[in-house]
Length: 316
Image (cartoon, rainbow, N blue to C red; front, side, top):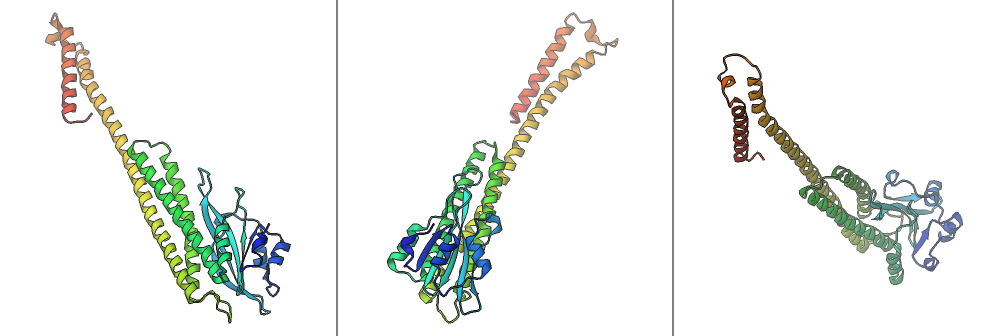
């Protein structure tokens, strides 16, 4: 399906297009190389197999264009995989930008309709339209970072409150999200840098004039900030993991301390019982009328003495 209202603008938006729809959207003088055409038409792939990029391509007959693959983040609503990365392919010529949004495994594509309608309304050229799209995606990554920070903060609160159930599972899940996000942000940052270094330009055409490059510089700074925030989030997550492990060690130490106290309390009564259980002649207590009660008094006194000692030492 395609957004028919945008066909006369510099930004043409397609969603899961057929070959006929793609050909109808392309300008008459644009011929795509076959691998690029296959990339635009193939169904969405696993996001771990894709990397964002922007590069110039030429068919050798004078038809050249910029092709790119972008990965835009959004909330998925899935507890196991809360972040979903949507593939958005782009084809850019001096007079047109075509975006191909692909429906993900959860049944929806990246929503950039508002950004596209604004760009169409103000009449942005293709280079500036691309900046609007990339900047919108960069803002999405900043939103994801805030969500990750909130999740890490919740984990830390849970550890402080002693709610250690499934903490390791949540830590592993957030760590996977951080790695996946960084794997997608770094190539996007590099692609943005290529625009600033004039390594993504059409021969004889100025696709990204100075004012557009200055806007890409702002977006590049945002992506650098995302990278820095990812490093900080990784360090915070490592701190939560170490804190969790320390709490587990403290709990184990507390358990071992209690077991030691119990063993110590039982040690003296066991010794006393074993001592009098020898039944050897010569022990004066055997001839006492109240020898049995004496042994009980000795056991109780030594037990109370140990409890007082442990209490003063704050071992329990």
